[in-house]
Amino acid sequence: MLKSKWLQGLALGLAAVTTSVNAAVDFATDDERNSMQVFETARPSVVFVTNEQLARDPRSWDIMSVPAGSGTGFVWSADGYIVTNYHVVQGANKVMITLQDQSSWPAKVVGLAPERDLAVLKITTPNGKLSALNLGDSSQLTVGRKVLAIGNPFGLDATLTTGVVSALGREIVSPNQRKIGNVIQTDAAINPGNSGGPLLNSQGQLVGVNTMIYSPSGASAGIGFAIPVNTVKDVVPQLIKNGRIIRPVMGFEAAPEQWALQSGIEGLPILRVFNNSPAQEAGLQGVSRNNWGQLILGDVIVAINGKLTPTNDAYMSAMENHKPGDRVEIQFVRNGKVQKRSLILAAPPVNQP
Image (cartoon, rainbow, N blue to C red):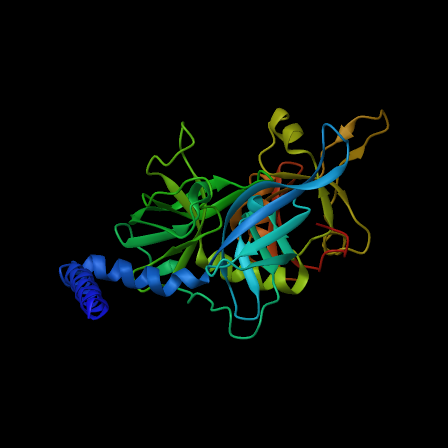
């Protein structure tokens, strides 16, 4: 009898709690309901990434694998491809992926793009265990649109923060000092550990990959940056197929940028032209020496298809918009006069980064 009454009381208590929770949801605003729905839908696709590196034990001098950092990633496809930031797995000897059910899986590094701060990993799990995020279109973003970030700041897994698109078209510096353009700026709180996590729109679609913050203190100051998903959609298939970004080449070596700056040269000076290359076929000329051993400036590339290339970074970015086999028109300066040539871009050598 007493047991029956106790069970009845427990049932009533649980019913009261359930009613209270449902009431809380019922009283939520439309915006709150949207945030909850996006989080619950996207959460299973967000993963915890652990970077382990080799280190020597200071007492025994044994080599061992130790955690060197962590970040966030997300499921790109149900067959096990995971996307994160390059700097999250940089230098890793071993990478572990922890899913939302707390199961951990060793990951293989499939491809790296330090110039875009992106990396693709691969894990092998049972069929049906992974669900990929839906991809959005970052070109449709406007300042003021709501965005949501899910990540693992300071190791606190599955943390949701919300904000808006604060600005578009920002420029940040990648881990290998290349410039990344068209970056999304957001005030959604992004902290250490959020790197590599998804930035979502109110439809739950991926619109960016959270990559860095601007903060004098190292904590969120309301200025975070995300690589736009349209860049990610271009880079990830290349990393899966080739392990790196395939950038076409003209077949020349550029002079050091510092030398060009010190010499007051505006553009990309050609140091030497490779044999049997598109640049050689187009008649481009590199640096030479006169009879007295003095350096004679060769051609200086100033534009590709009308787009200015004042630096090596600008040249590389312009080349990333093309693929081997594309025909481009280049403008260059020779003996003080601007000239034009048309050439067909070639595939890079296998050992060229």
